[in-house]
Image: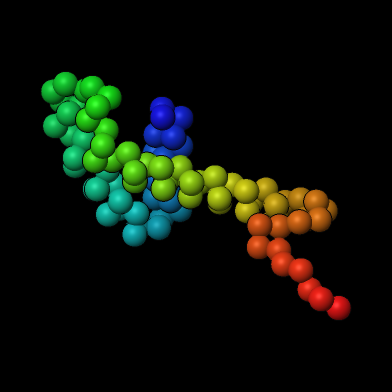
Length: 87
């Protein structure tokens, strides 16, 4: 779960670094529920309010990284959006 949380925060940072300002709302949804627990008692069981959102952010960065890697290597012969044409 720590890897997913790290990947989620990396994804959020990357999107904000690209100036995708829609993710500022995601940052608020992540940071505001966590703030009382960070200041008080950081226990793993208090991750429920932000865990799902971090999973989606981690999936987002995995997807974007795979798309970027496939654009760099078009000779692999497949893509994430490939389909079969009947000729």
